[in-house]
Length: 466
Image (cartoon, rainbow, N blue to C red; front, side):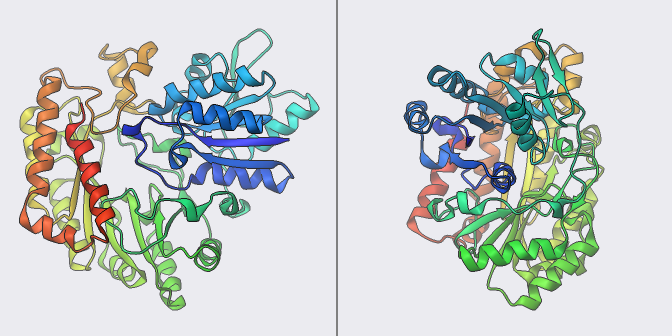
């Protein structure tokens, strides 16, 4: 049986985040382990159009096509399912990833040529699904599966999370083509090349209204340090990886684990670098941890600050305050690490004065970079449900909200026109990055003319977004 696991085709303005796909990498390994022939196809990396995908699909004709998708992937993923069925009606189509996990019934109902949805973790679900299909057994007992019964009704099976992450083999790095990825990572700065993402923990117990990290469960589960070090050893030795992106939502939540992990890295005397591009919580950081992270190879941390207005932070359920933000950013800088801040503009309860406070806070803090993202009402979040209940957005028209990046205004508060919000975001970016101190600091991390060209392209796309 041939299985194709794909990152979907994306329009040019959405194809910048090109990194090895860990999620389908784990599933590919689980499928390889039981003897299936698996291909990982990263369409953005290959710069595939829909026509390119169609040509490739026709040469392979897989028995299973699985696509991982974010909310902005709906349109192109749907067309890929259509292409698959047009060329081979017996190809089984499966969707997974953040959007299907947050809206499983809606996703399956949206696409005529989609057979199954996997919500949450798929390492157990996908191999069992294929086994059940081969044996023509019932589907009811497969955790995390969403499917149609004989009457066409959508059935959502019980959701389960994998408690022992060490029970999973490491991702199928042999199928990723690591050496074919861009030498310049899709982040503002980097220290070493080449890079690869790794995951140490899963789950999030916090309740931020704008975030759907809970699709991985409310309990934080962690791989053992020995298990993670085994993967780092492999990537360092066999693939020449010198920079590691820890993509967890809550890597620093367990301080004892982080400190022990850093100590083990230091003892190995690796010439490597680490960063957390997805961000860490400020309230988990202390000087002992940060000092060890610096010694182990960390050079910057992304942190979720989100707003300079305390009432907005409270509504977001961030469980932090402005004095703590100032204290922890200062602490990170004292430890010798750079800080990159995430901010949101256009949150539903915001006023123009609230946004002004956010921009001023970003300018005040000792940051090397700031991401001023336009608020998006993402499915699976508490604020999405609030807006639906208040009649601000319609659940049945959710697909209209998602074909954009955080540079684009997908939603604007009642008191702030769309054009005004985009203008505010654009001015905030220009104010932040045009300061001589910020220009100089970022030039220190500049690696090449190609790197500069990439940064200019990304900045232009963000500033010119709609």
